[in-house]
Amino acid sequence: MGISKKQGDAVSRNGGRDMGRDAGLLGKPEHVAVERGIAEFRSGRPVVITWSGVAVLALPVDGMTDTRLAAFRRLCAPVEPHLVITERRAQALGLPGTDAIGLVVSGDNAAAIVALAADARVERGLEVVEAGPVADAAIELAKLAQRMPALLVADANKVEPCDPPLVSVAADAITRFRRTAIESLAVAAEADVPINGGVSARFVIFRDAIGGSSVAVIVGSPDLREPVPLRLHSACLTGDVFGSRRCDCGDQLRLALRRLEEQGGGVILYLEQEGRGLGLANKMRAYQLQDAGLDTIDANSALGFDDDERDYGVAVRMLQILGVKRVKLLTNNPAKLDGLTQAGIEVSGRIPLHGPVNADNRRYLTAKATRAGHKLDHLLAALAEPADAAEAPVASERAP
Image 1 (tube, rainbow, N blue to C red):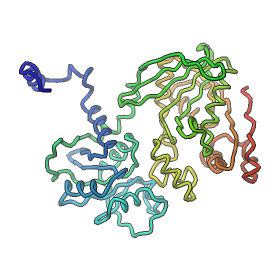
Image 2 (image 1 turned 90 degrees about the vertical axis):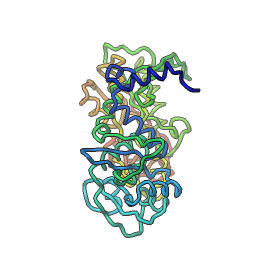
Image 3 (image 1 turned 30 degrees about the horizontal axis):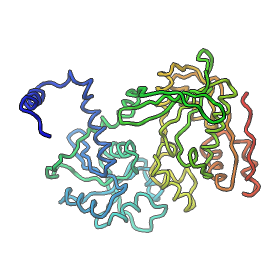
Image 4 (image 1 turned 180 degrees about the vertical axis):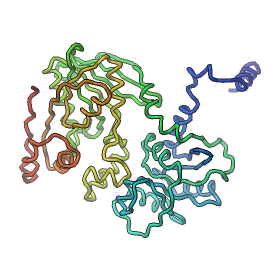
């Protein structure tokens, strides 16, 4: 439906004046640009990333087809794009360095390029080129969009105008965006939700600037004057909902509910951090690499990610909004204690959550204990036993 002449005149007048007074409605332009860039990456479209006079066209290889690759090459012509990967992925490929690098992909099809970004082993010669000045920002934007941190990039200065126009994002706005998204967090809705077993709970839904929805589950009636029993739980569709045996996430969630009930109440922050912050699709890719022989830490690195991509700033902001300042943390992961403490949340103690060991999760738990520093010492004996002997549940420690 078209707009009236009156509406059109209003749009024209607004377009010619300073829009700063409308920042409350439209947001800061640099932040809006990042949000639009995230949406473009999620839709598989390229984005122009700028920095100090440099303009680079970037396209995630995640989900790329031969048709889309051919179209991107035409857009970049006469320049041939190269593949940018993180230093973690470079190291997995046996390449030296401590920064993102570029790889020549001239003539490669989409499958060959994706293999360079994600396969456990690559049996081909690799020609390294400079990644470019906006490589880190492009990788960060891909992570924000929960795409693999691997992108095709090319000089954007010779790109012909497009219809619709390409979204342009400043590199420094991308690097600041995570903090902005955390600060935008607000309560969207809440309601009482009775849980099986007679547990009373109130679900408080939080929403951020890009539509993410984390949840605070307030179990019982915790006394905010005392340290509040708290579980920071990263969402795990496979374990929490379907009972996957590959991890202990669902077991820890159910144990946490019981512990909070025993403590007279507490809080579970259910965070949108699937796969230690990789996102569900990348978590499945990591599982494929684990099936090929890698452990959970090396699988993340092979995809170009850090060991743990989670940011607990979201949890801190949720606690601040809820009025929680002191907590007793239900976790086996010391990094969670450190993250909260450094952000100003007083952690007065730790309550362990030890779930069962089985033939499918014992390698995962071993990696968490020996490589990620999780406090699972009491499980090491069980993990050392034959797989069939480790099937029996390991008793959880009682809360102190």
